[in-house]
Length: 85
Image 1: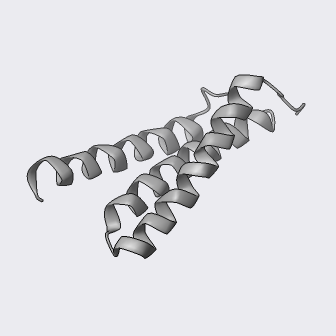
Image 2: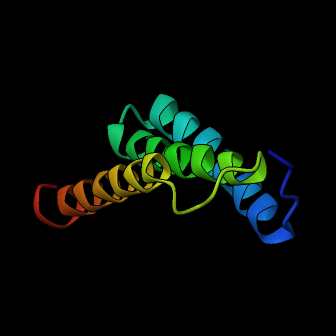
């Protein structure tokens, strides 16, 4: 497996890391789980990006499942924001 140093994937990973950190601090400062959920979703996206950088194919089943779960977390979070608050 060779490293795939695609600049777009690296930038996406970088932004995922920032969103995870901000989600954590948003949760701690506001005592609201919603920023944490967004951080978890982007943490999963970040895992997917890291795997691609490490040489895995972006269409591997495991990565597709990880991304699908991340999207479900985002959908849940937006549902809570739109209908429960």
